[in-house]
Image (cartoon, rainbow, N blue to C red; front, side, top):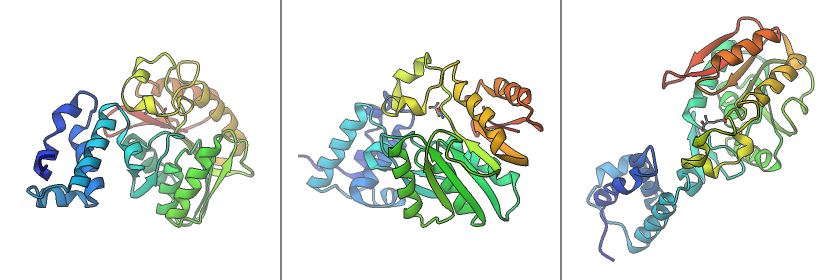
Amino acid sequence: MTELSVAAALNRTAELAAISDSPRLDIELLLCEVLDKPRSWLFTWPDKTLSAEQQARFEQLLTRRLQGEPVAHLLGYRDFWTLRLKVSPDTLIPRPDTETLVEQALALLPDGPARVADLGTGTGAIALALASERPQWQLTATDLHPGAVMLARENAQAHQLSNVEILQGSWCAPLSGHFDMIVSNPPYIDPEDPHLSQGDVRFEPLSALTAEDKGMADIRSIAEQAKAHLKSGGWLLFEHGYDQGETVRDLLRQLGYAQVRTQRDLGDNDRVTLG
Ligand code: GLN
């Protein structure tokens, strides 16, 4: 095997560009993994060469990535907000878009005791980000899938967040009592959406991605159920698709929610609607 330098490995982006939106970042993360070094190290030591073992492992990961496997699945984790979260094929991989929901939730309630629920928590990303920022909040996260519940509990434990409980069940079913805020990043993609057959989403559970009624079915169920679990003046927040803002606003108003508005994400797309 010819020796491979860090700089040469970083140059393998062209192969990945065909299948990934972030080829450079992908390579950097895979290299950090095999070298067990932080990203800054790659730029400090471009001339270092990989050991034979490291090179073999790098080629192996690159091949799997070229076959489409998400980087988060290859590494076993994804960074979200300030937290490194364990991921598995049982749940959605946390996305930067969802940090918009976290920002909005933090901005809505003052720091102080509050009860907040996160429905369909998956890895626990939203609930754990909120719990880490607001030690006085009491978070309840729910998920239908036992694999997700286990994963979210593991992530809560890893970050020693004791102000979060994770319960198994559908949307609001496991909740008791009333909440100051209910948040959710539910499945909202139209099952007919052609993007579902491309890229990383192929490796994520469809149950976390798609909903009937052009992606609106679960948002509707949650908005209906949540009314019985919100305190008077409490907030409901949803992540949704870039083209669903108006539909979600209409739905919330029909159901009697007030102060309904939509927030854009970093890509300037409608992403979070609240009421
Ligand atoms: N935003 C994600 C995507 O388009 C979907 C997330 C979700 O369905 N909640 O891949």
